[in-house]
Image (tube, rainbow, N blue to C red; front, side, top):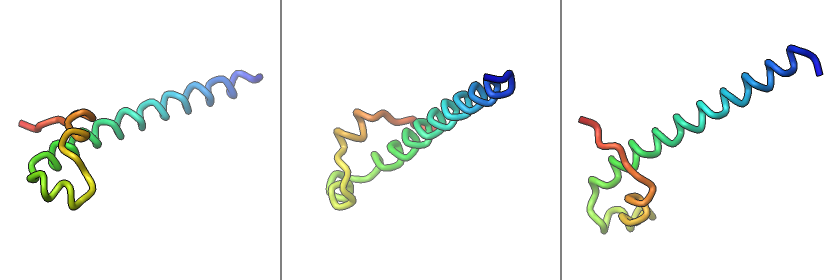
Length: 61
């Protein structure tokens, strides 16, 4: 294994971790927006309030 192959692998795994963290953050913002809807609207869209609350939400200030 060359020196640059190790750097490439470390950079790629770091990038993958960053992308996954941003995806989780985006999901929490979306969940917060969805939780503002009533239960009937959530059910029609295929969501449940309990599942959204379990996944977590970020309520912006």
